[in-house]
Image (tube, rainbow, N blue to C red; front, side, top):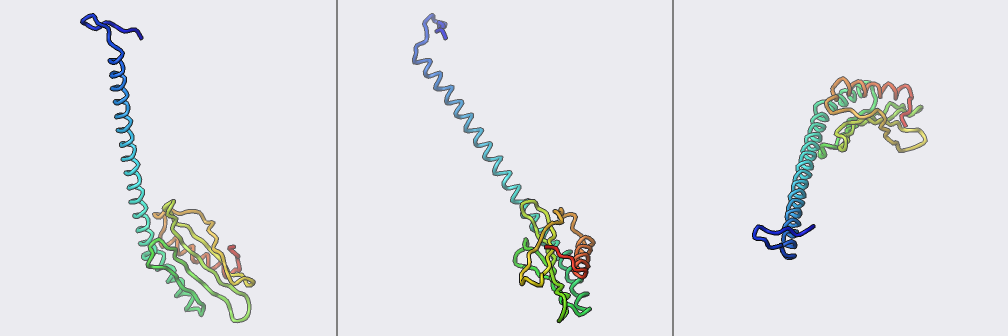
Length: 180
């Protein structure tokens, strides 16, 4: 870059160029800092939105447990108990995002072991629910719940869906279907 004469005919000195480059570097730094601040503010706003959505989803799941899932599981348990079987709905009401289960035992004193659980749990990463089922094997005192029905949006959860899932679980249990 050639030095151009100034309006008074003098050529700029090397110091002038250094000052000019320093000012440009300072301006680039200021712009980079403004961009960093903007990026951080956006990231924080996104985090806050995600936290708010997660809180709303947990609250919605808690409401579904108390208004839809729990009453249906209790209804099925009452029907089974009226027939002489053991059934209970299990829910940790201190944790609104905890799973809720219907535990059923259709076993006789002597004979086949027909017991298992159906569980509805909240997936906080996807803000969805999923259903899991298990049966207790005669050879094992423990059981594992298998979640393979896919994820359901919270808005899909209603009395009919829960009732059908619970009734199908009991029918499968009676038929001896193993969910593990």
